[in-house]
Length: 492
Image (cartoon, rainbow, N blue to C red; front, side, top):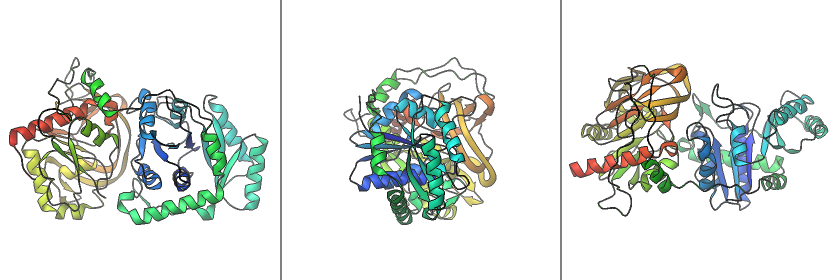
């Protein structure tokens, strides 16, 4: 059981300013000396970077689709351990979730699972008394969701604020803050949302300070903290990576039937393998994890799982590092914006050659989205690593959505038939989109195969959250240990 004050910050729709308000709240409370645990509903990578800057703690995601509703509470408790307040930023509108699946993965579902009060951020720029009808509708739609108050955003004047407050008082809804239009803090965006913190750290720190100042001026922090303290105890055991690996070791995968291009399987389990966890025999395999401005998308639990499985995790910045870390036995390349840095990535010929050599040796390489582009032959006409036989380019089409996936080829991450849930979010196109041994087959409305499995390489557009399938981390570390032992590899 944990007993930590907590708030969920939600909104009627995207674009209301909830990221600005949430980040400002986190920073303002942290400036008061509170240990604040930051969380984000859904598959977002960028907002948690701003949350981490505001609080000094890793921003963590709570995704009921990719990890399952049963892990929302334990993952929350894991992140909030030792903190005095937790603030959870919602996703999209309060009741928006996975398409066609009811409340699954919505902010409302997470609020209910955490038994947390909700603060609704309302864009008041084009309304006055109607705000009461809007808030009343959201408060009454699901009686199990407790909206404890409203923060008004983009308020035009003192007179406008008075009209809004009067209307909400009449409706019995507390107003916990009001931010003026002029107090908006500039946070630059581009094709996939805000520019990540890793690309503009100094400017981002200034922006977060501005958000905190606006929240301090416009919000009643004492009332918000009092509301957070009404959440009460949460009967959840904190998620633990070592325990998750132990549970995954005996869990069978689920068969993946009816996926075009996929073999028919009856289901299979991840094969048993010697443990390489800390305390076991042998050296811990070095696994390089891409980071830096071009590859900043990675869930905090991934390196935690790799470490618990026995790896030594070393961060690699493909924009600056010309060699793989000494002794690299495996490589993880997550998401990010390689299209923004394509010139610098192409110019780093020595690292591209090292990555290609590692892949050719049979060592495990796991690449998601941006990682897939980096492994391709080219990106927007510039040479990349040449590991994957495809060419990538920017496009005007946004590919976005949750995916129900099944592994259609054995790889260092999963055996054929393993089910995982993930998320796609990109404006690039890779041609061809799948190899002769695809990585995944998508079920449901997105029925297609996608990605590449070649030797030890698993490359795909699909973002996955390994906390929802911890066995992939164990399998990857075991494969890395095997590769290191077989090759006696030195530096990259």
